[in-house]
Image (cartoon, rainbow, N blue to C red; front, side, top):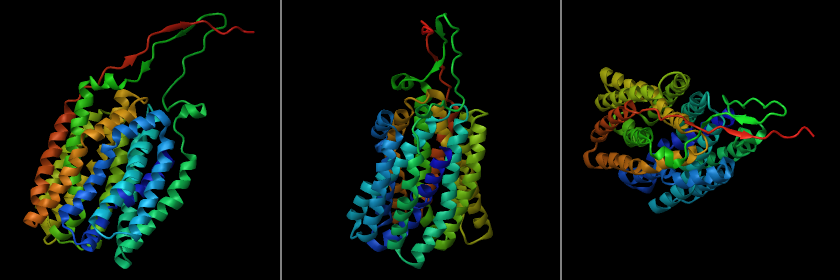
Length: 421
């Protein structure tokens, strides 16, 4: 399951979640729209996974991840092919990208893949989710420069066609091996154990065991609301910058488009390494400590980007410092979901995650649009980068004060043994 979901996320990240940046300038220039308008569509696409979170979580908890995964991938494939051959204006761009491409990707990868992987692990949940996220970062390293080179050498249409073909030829067939839960195959999640069998002729005592939180019980804990607030502030900090990172590096810092693609790819590689490290540490030390420290370093990284440029030795050093900080610490984002699974269990994970993504969906729209407006108004992204640093530091404070919720236990029950005959 780790291998299946990781391969899928490799392509989804390199093409959609991280690779969308190579589409920003070609689409903006082809349609003749402003940076704020361009960012609006891409930011709503980032927020869409949150807006649909409660519905996606309910569907997954009721019907299973695979029942959501396959139709979502088909929707995304249709979207890439339609957009490749029909892109007359900004309204068509918004309709296709949001209604097909983003909807399909968000349902498949933000909800179905994460929810499915969480079902298979208890003991090494953080490591499993981090491997998934780490391989997704490799997708950015491999595919962002490749997709940019393809668009530069051919055109935007071929970039979209190739994206659709990746999904059609590689991702859809992989779904054949996807399984929702280990219990469906007669297995237990990693780290789970069965109670010992009762002796013949004696009543079986079902021992007290830990149980998952219900949605209502989780909503009554302090930890859930601090996870929600911290995750929202983190997304506010990162999305405004990451959605605009390609134009920031090209138009604000003076890079060529290919150099910007290479630098973002390098950041993805650093992110790959860091996510493996974060996953290993996340199963062994305090998750809230990892999150608090990472957000503090991430905030410092944004300040380095604010002061850096690609024209002087000091400026280049500062930009590369940002790449290192962001690449290393952005990997801690997966620890939020590992903590959610650890605190509240498997049975309502998708629903609880959906509520969190829905709650901060507004930030995913507001921060990139604000960044685009800042550039259109002032010709620079500086006034967007500094607030991002402040939000990152505030998110770290939220994670620092999380208290692990108590473990809930079942009541012991005596059951009569089955007769030998």
